[in-house]
Each structure stands twice: as C-alpha cells, then as structure tokens.
Amino acid sequence: MRKVIALAVVCVAAALIASFGAKTASADYGNTAQYQASISLNCDNKSAPFCTQVVGLGGVWSWFAFSNDGTFDSTETFCGHNDPDYGSGAFHFNGDGEWRVGPTSEDSVPFGQTQDFWVNYNDGNGWQDSDVPYPGAGLSHHYSFKPAPGISAMAQVSYIPGR
View (cartoon, helix red, strand yellow):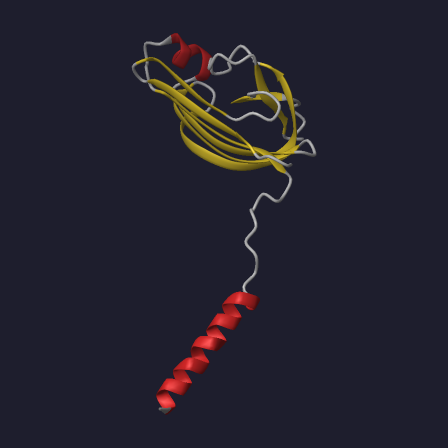
C-alpha cells in the first residue's frame, strides 16, 4: 500500500511540475518574424552559362526570418567549385541587418518573380539581392526552377499572419 501511495504522490508532483513549472515554447527568431523563407540553389552543370557565368558552380542554402520592423536574421551556407575568386570549398555564416522589397537583379534565380527581398548586412557593402522571391504583401508561395540537368533551385516563403 505504501508503494501505491508513494507512486500516486510522485505522479501528482510530476503533473504539477509539467503543468506549472514548464516554460512556454517560443520561436528562436522572436515574435516579430513576418516572413520565414528558405532557398536552395544547386548549380553543377559545367556547360551551362547560368552556372559558369552568372551564379558560379556550387550551391547556396539559406534561411531567413524577415521581421515586421524591417530587420532580418539569416543562416547561410555556400559551396563553390573552382570559383576564380573564392576557390573551392564551403563556408557558413549567420547574418542580420535590414530588409526591404526591390526589383529582381540580373543574377537573381529566375523563378518568374518580379520582386525579391533585398538585404543590408550593415557591413558597408550596401543593399544586395537575397535571391529570395517576394510573393507580395501577406502572401506565401513555393518556387521551383529546373531549366537543365545539374541546375536546380527551390524557395519557400511563408507569411506569418498577425505580425
């Protein structure tokens, strides 16, 4: 009987701790993220001008949280293959700064969009195209680009309502 009572006390205590002692989960990027976006570009076709002259051989994998106050956070990884400026290999960084919407640039992935999210990392280099398509105010969209073998890009932009 003692074991049953002890087990009951332990169960009640565990339930109380779980109900009142646990912290509420929150997103790492805070409550101001208005859009969450990711993009993946893989360009390994050595005979395609898009890979060799526009974006370079290799890949880009990025995640962005665009906040309603005009700031952003990002996690980005790049991998180059025999790039004349950067050589071969991968590098990664976490970025933050300001964002705005602007027209697509010449080297933007051609998903068929007319506008992209533009970012300023506050590093002195000014505004640059993030290559993330802007679907329009309050909209979410999935994008795909596969024009030839060895070239593939996808982007997902999710609008977070109420922010």
